[in-house]
Length: 299
Ligand SMILES: [Zn+2]
Image (cartoon, rainbow, N blue to C red; front, side, top):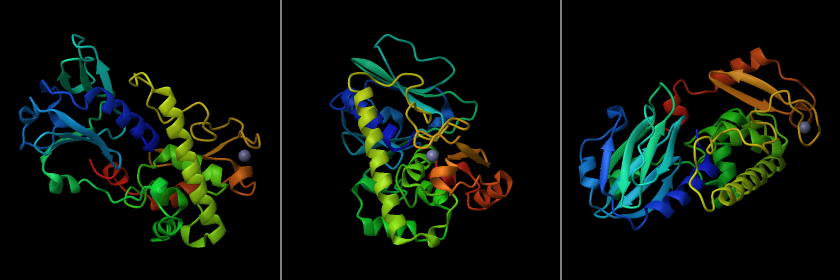
């Protein structure tokens, strides 16, 4: 699931290829991807793309006449930019949008087709897609604190709740918690003011750092296969089970629950304690939404 830094990188690349360009043809290859029927995708054809924005983890293509194409990549959805005559990648292509200078393909390399495309008319219809998560980079400390302590959850769950915070998922929550030196299973009502401040600073620093890194990485090219990923070289703990923590060299640990894995450093984050996988799984599972759609803010 692309998170805030990857979503921002995509938005900036999509703006470069699509804004000011006329959509020539929209082809739906996997019918399940299209979740609306009015306006139709034919209604997009011949219109200029005026803006590409994001709404949480969704991509919004704003076209002439206030028609919006709303795309949610879910777990395995990705964008590909193809040369004008290139064929869309077989089997994984869900839809293509052809411009004169190239074609944008929406792909999903997974047997579970979860990525979605909605075509809606007017700003009011667009507002329905807003999960309401707080943009941490633009937020005040007070707003961050209010969101964090709104319910009593594990830190892992609170950070990844799209209704509380915008664009933070499994990967960046691990990285933020490591930077803040806080345990993923600490409950939000047990946090001291100092810990909340530390978490806020860590969230801003971690997201800003990776937004800047990806901006450099994709400054002059559109992300290709494997470029948008939850596993990055340079991550401290996420996806690094058993590897040395870059801060203290202790081996990174994991908690497995549902389909997820949380990674943490016992020395930096849990006072040296290796959390028992099974009981924690239960705790995190109980604090976790039952469906992926709920976890990711809807399809
Ligand atoms: Zn460490």
